[in-house]
Length: 119
Image 1 (spheres, rainbow, N blue to C red):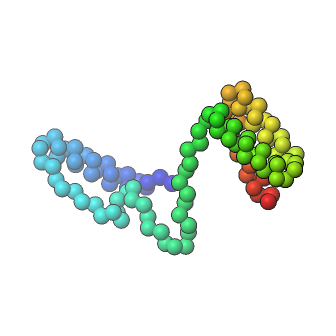
Image 2: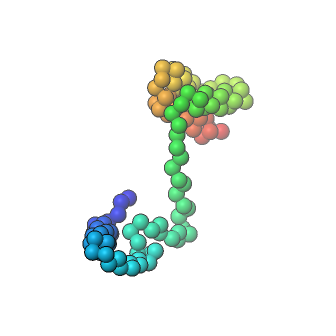
Image 3: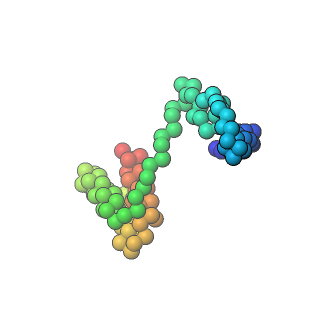
């Protein structure tokens, strides 16, 4: 979801007027209410939960190892892994071992999500 044309035009107009004022030495005081600011967050209406912030996913071998350890803990409690989870785990481990961390991590995280979903 981006800003609309009207908001983008307003931002451009404000930026141009400030730049013009700064070049002439007259810096006007521009006050925009927070509710009308183009990048202001909209207040929660209470009907929808706040969206979670995106998480940073490190692409390191240590993160691969921690995900694999998490799968191993779950496996020790359950005794075995379903076939699709086992395949994803082995593929993820192999990819991490070859240095392809992002796709390997994606497979390992998918395996964990499947295990959690099948509680």
